[in-house]
Every structure is written in structure tokens, then in C-alpha cells.
Image (tube, rainbow, N blue to C red):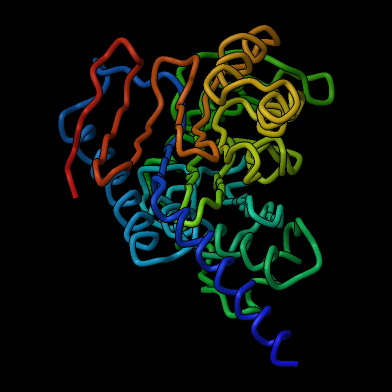
Length: 355
């Protein structure tokens, strides 16, 4: 009996030692606020400063949690909540309007250690949809809940519920009116000025902007997590849902490979199963994170006619942020250093601060 007790203690000791050993590796947090036509010529210094500060706040919040021993799911949820509360970004408070003048929000989260995942789509009264997605992951047997049922679930588990008017912003309302004026079926997500076409029920649906927020992290224990949240497309109709709440398309996390959060033309990300395909390229094709992400974002995505970007971190703490648009709101914190970038890689990044 004493031998068994001793053996159990030794196993516990070595398990704890192994986890502590991982603490020597990098803590990494990466965030994004959407990709699209983001040109310096169209950005005022005040706007640039506001976006930079918003991304920086999200990075600080999430990183502080991991510095204190918190987990990667804790960090990505906290970072995305900051972006959801910021009206500059198309998620939470800054969500765009549907054709009917409603705000319908989607979010998802995934734990790379367990492959547990949760998502909500079309919620209308949950202040922070990313927290509803995490509740689905941790407090239900499901992966995705939608619409009124998802709202009811969030309320039942004590998440903050708000009146739909909370999500109203003048800028988003004006964007809806302009979209309706230009084309009754035009969909316009958040940041791009490019017009393209696809069909919905044999009618033209022009997608001219993208808007999503997301975060990926590697914590001190070597565990990965990803989170994504969005308000969808301006003037969207027919209950359209994009890639953001679709596990494997808009995000994915697996400790064996990487954690990914996507932003772009959702229909193409779904068709490519973007995030999971990158993970599979790493696991089965033995590709590096950068090579796999570049293959998908810079080659396969535009080959189909789609565009956008993503953020990703691998199990070793390497990160990448590829995009094929003119810009992407993005930033990362690694070794205590915060870097935020907005424009294409030909433009210089903005180093914001050191912690």
C-alpha cells in the first residue's frame, strides 16, 4: 500500500514537473480586427491611433492573464471581449446591421488541449458572444447553438444580457442605409471597398467588406486556443452565417499543430475548411505553419475568388499573420513586446510598447 502511495506521488510529481518545464517556452498572444481595403491614405491619424489602442488593449488584457498563470482559453476569450466592447470593430458593440435592421452576432472558441469547442450564431441580446460560445463549450454537450435558443442558453447560464439597442451605432446604421440605397441585395461587411458578386437564390449578392475579430494564444503550459467573433455582413439576408462560428473553417486549435482565427469572405473559408486544412497540412504534410498558411491564404483562397487573412500560432510559439488584402488590423505580444500593424507588409509596422 505504501508503495502504491509512493508511486502515485512520483507520477504526480513528474506530471507537474513536465508542465512547469513547458513554462520556459514562449507565452504568445495574437489578435486581429478584420481584413480588407485598409489604406493609409484613407486613415486619419486619430483613427489610426484609435485602432492601434484598441488592439493593444486586447493584447494587454489577454497576456496579463497568461502571465499570472491563466490558460490560453482564458486569454483569447478576454482579448476578444475587449474587441467586442469596442465599437470600432465589427463584433459585439460594433456589430453591423442586417437588412432588417437587426444585429445578429456569431462567435466560436476552441481549446487545443482537449479539442473541445463551442459556438453561437445569430444571437441578438448577448453582450459578449464569445463568452456564450465558451459556455456552450464548457457547460453543454453541444458545439453550436443558434438564434433565440442560443440567447436563452446564455441567459440561463448567467451571461450579461442587453437590450438590442445596446448594439446600435450611428456609423453602422448609416452603412446599412447606404448599402440598401446602392443595391437591395448588397452585403457589406466591415473593411473592404472591393465589390464582388455571388448568387443567393439566383440574385446578385455583392460582398464589399470584411469584419471579424479574433485571438489565438499559446500559454506557459504549451496549450493552444483560438477565438473568433463577428457581426457578420452589413445588409445580410436570409439568416446568412459565415465562417466565424464554423469550427474548422473560421477557427481551429490543436496542441499538436496550431491555433488559427480567420477573417475574410466567409463562404470561401467554409468551402476550403480553411483553419482545419492548415492544421492538417502541418500534421500530415509536415509543413511549417507559415508555409501552410501562405499556401491557403495567398494561393488557394484567391484561386477560388476569395480574399482575407488569418492569424495563427503553432505549438512551438511561432506565429504568422498572412493576408491577401490591402490591410488587416492585427497585433501580437511575445516576450513582453507588443507589435501592432494595420497596413500591408510593404508598409512598416507600429511597435507600440514594451511590457
